[in-house]
Length: 223
Image (cartoon, rainbow, N blue to C red; front, side, top):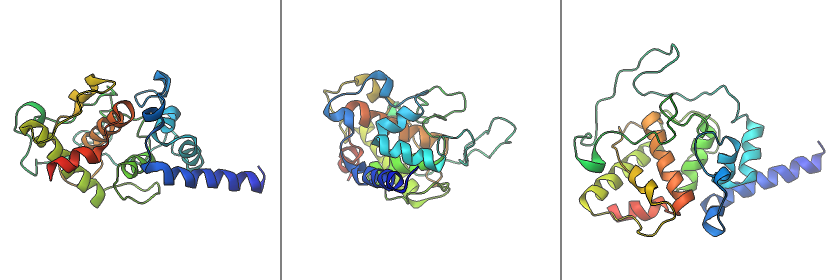
């Protein structure tokens, strides 16, 4: 590969980070089902997140490799990884009813308990958080713990409890209203991107890409 080609690729990757706050492509012209965020999408999940530049950046950094440095500090780790004590609820726990009960759903139905294809490594997690206003560093280091993860967890709990109390309102007219029911479950506020937090991130991201719901429009209603 020539030097000029490398510079062009780096420029494209840098532009991806600049565009992270911009509307996703499907908010403007629609994406095919094969381009949607979800289980089995792999590289196309990256395309739905922030375009071809992000995919190339992730490819170069090895984000899509099978081996993952993710630290899932969440109950039982399958595959001989042992168990981690189940965290005690914080911030009021999840003893409510309706939306504020239980944990965020694993909408991917991945048997590992979270979408291992959408979140193969910390890099894509960081990019998803950055796209929604959480100022995390752009690298591939694990987020365990991280203050911006703590911030997201608190925001998620506030939004879910706000939906429960009718203080927070979801848009009425969206492309996929069925996705709105996934806004439910309370997170442990510990700053760790465990399974439940990754599931909540997927709900946030999927409703953004499919329904155009900016997370900030929901968090603002809780203040």
